[in-house]
Length: 194
Image 1: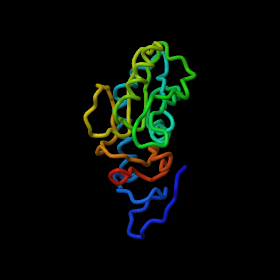
Image 2: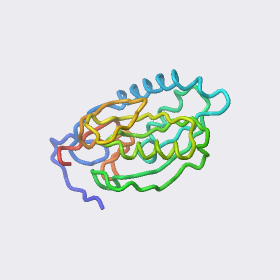
Image 3: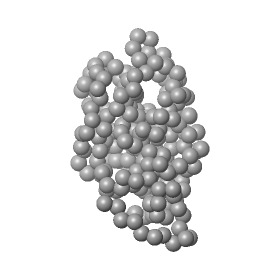
Image 4: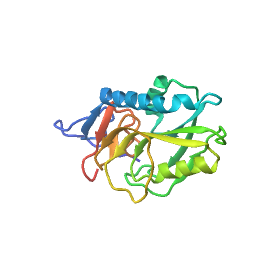
């Protein structure tokens, strides 16, 4: 359960009332980055769909906003589905991978565009890529709205990246902090050790 406490008036406020936070990217900057991703995705994927639409897999819950902004800019036939896998819950560090929802559409023979909110350690995205291939996907392309600038113990491939952020806990535009802040208009970072 989240505990609410009053904040000093000098704190940088967000509309989510998570407390002081640094504003990294405005909503306009995020939307511009998503549009740039769409251009790159279109260049590579619009020729891949002569006989079967691309299967766009939205990684819930964080990628809902980015997928909603991205879809109107994609110029090829697609089918939308979702998958929900989590490692964070109400924490700010990743734990055990938990499968909540698997795609309803068949992945067999599909060209998959997997869209996630963030590439952090890469564990979740790598597990989803492997899942798609095991289920018989013909190809898996990945897009993330945000990639943390950090070293990773695993090598995970990402084809399209919207923005890069420091290795700190970020929220907003679909990303959450302890379950809150997904509706913040832009990308924010919690204070160190937040």
